[in-house]
Image (tube, rainbow, N blue to C red):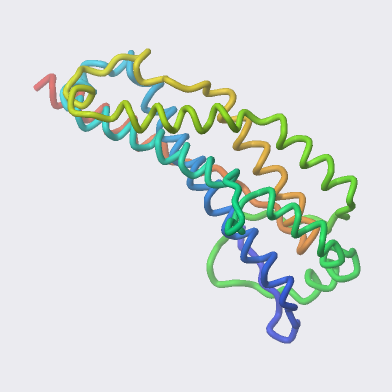
Amino acid sequence: MKGKSVNKTTKVTGKEEEFIRLSHTLRGELNNANWHFITWKCLWSYIESYSDEMNVAHTFFTLSMRGHLLETLLRLNKLFEKGDESTANISYFLDFAEKNIDIFAAPAADSRKRNEEEMIIEKQVDEEKPSQVTRDVIKENRARLKGLPVKKLKKWEDDALLHIDRKVAKTHINVFDECPVDIEEIDRTIDTVHEILNVYSVAYDGQRWDKDLVFTHGIKNMLDAIKAGRKK
């Protein structure tokens, strides 16, 4: 559906601009991590059924898969990166939300919705009535983050960096070698951060973002084309 934007007559405060910057930065990192992981999962799921086709160009598929997995892990770890100069991670985002909780006040959020106008470009958003953010909500979100496998994500990233070398690139694809991570844990991490970001997006202007894209059919079409070419 088409997204909405705040009318030009609506004044945006400095802290609102910072919230929008943080929200968009984190959303961009998360969505890209998710899209790379969707691609990796799709390719990994086809290793057995399309092993002959993939091994026609095994270097290409091996490097592609490992590249997508590494990009997933790099972007996810960036979301949890901490440091004195880091202002684009999920912890900083929640700290900012707590310090500036007034920007999520219901009257202000309702006003933003009343002043919205159609945009020319389409966004991946659904509209909802703005919800309320409280310190208890923020506390609950922090607790959810603590339950995520952050240390594992970093280890998987380090392992992925180590395993991309000339020997691996020249070896035929093996279904077990290409799954050095816990798929459910990464999916859980992506889903949790996605849900948390939407809490504040909905509270701010009633927009709930969708993180998924439908594109994996193209990967199957490519493998089918390779299969058809091999039969000629």
